[in-house]
Image 1: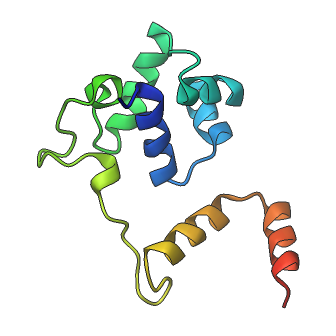
Image 2 (image 1 turned 180 degrees about the horizontal axis):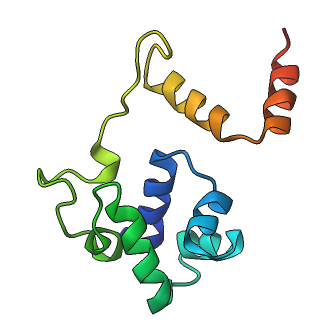
Length: 120
């Protein structure tokens, strides 16, 4: 059965955020986010309030993250069911769009390193 951490990780992945980025938004460490996602720890009450505010901005309910219930967008779809939106001129399919999203989330030095690895 899916737990809070798995749903939270999917939310983070859909938006292309690193654990460090979402930790910054929630005033917790990357290690704390990792523990939540792996199920080794649960968010504290004060963290749940911040998580609720963050996910609500994207139409997701805290109920869904906690127990899989709730209808975040009014149509019964949850964050993982929303298809990626990508313009044809930028990405040709969902896989390319995901790669582009991950690339954009990289630090500039990592981008340069990846481009060097791929070659000219």
